[in-house]
Length: 91
Image (cartoon, rainbow, N blue to C red; front, side):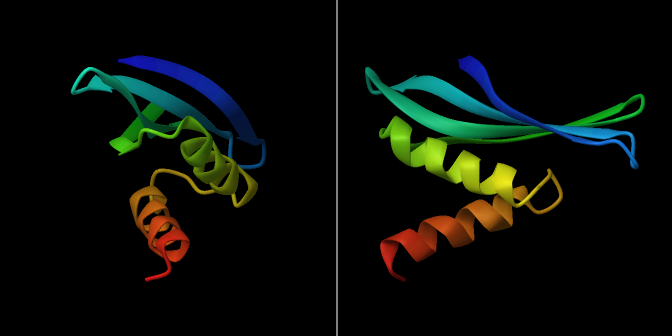
């Protein structure tokens, strides 16, 4: 598993930082991309990950950008990703 940080959002008033990471894994011999969100709050760290969202890196990067722009953290991360994918599929 290869994890690459794409964005970092600081909430200084909350003493909180959220990291938006692209995850690359091999699935059936091909690259597959997912997302990891890491929320750090003082001495506490919470991580959430969704692997194998798509084989298309650009698609997953668009989702990460959406999460970053909307300041989504680990609390609502999985629901937002699911809603985004359903919207893109026209369901």
